[in-house]
Image (cartoon, rainbow, N blue to C red):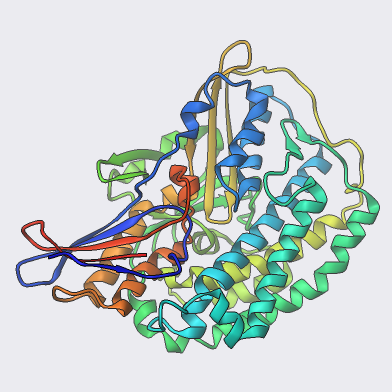
Length: 473
């Protein structure tokens, strides 16, 4: 008979989902699947709306990374208008996007993942959370709060509010940067740099504590995809797609946003609302690839800022080619935070950053527009079709968590095969299977547009289909 164990607080991930683990007659894991069980359907209810409403509307997909949707949507609208936005507007968009990357990565690392590192994967689940972390490690918890505040404060100062700012618009941004605001942000940089450097220093010392997890948390050969510029530099705002294989060899490069459908296909499965993108030349499901901070650090030639480049060189020593273990997504996030802070400082010191020319105005000049940017969790694509009146007739979104869907499912299976055996699911096994999902930091509300909290549901299913055990968070 199935039994239910309720664990409070809810799982440290965003959205709705469950995991099913299937056993064979001998009690060994045969299959495991990560199901996303909710849908809201932004692609459909934006139909019939004016194209210029898209950035503000699409930002409502998510309260954690609304800026990424603002940027990808605004870039798609720029393409519809066939305009080149002012350079200062591009700088300002980049600053806000980097601020969001810093705050989102800080949320993932300090609030969602670090209780596993600092309290232990086998710690009492009722206390394995940020509140116990504050009690046991107040300095680290305080650093996490301060670093997230740094990113959120920049978003609020630029956009007027921390969540769903309307400042990024088709053609640029709505207001220029004021000198006093630039100086306020620059004054925050030294503390933010100090926090991320000491966080990197202590986290790298913990790797020897997790040999099993590094070996089994979605650690397998795959492709990696992300955006780079013409020099192969780490970028988050503007660039072209690059794919590399497990050896770090480039297999496709220089792919423009308007050509994404030539290399990315989208599959569906009946047991999940989350799409399964794949690399078309290899077919489905062989064309599995990963995106996000781990992928970005695997595909680049360099980060482009001095401190981050030094850390990236050390990061690359973890693998002979690409770094394959998804456990190291956490490490990659910290390096990207460092790079983001350095880039914000660099952009704020641009000589034309205070220019008042920050928006291009135009009517629709094309019937199709595609916007592409790097969100904290990976490549984000917004693809719009409009009619002659500028009304949306069709929209397609490919979200970072969707790109990672095949890899997340394979990672859950790998961890389940290693940690689960027999007909019972232990708390430690549950948390490790779940922790594989946390390495990817999925935003299920973004990818399936779920509403509410995430009660992660894990089921153990016997060969006859009977539910042998289940745990609900």
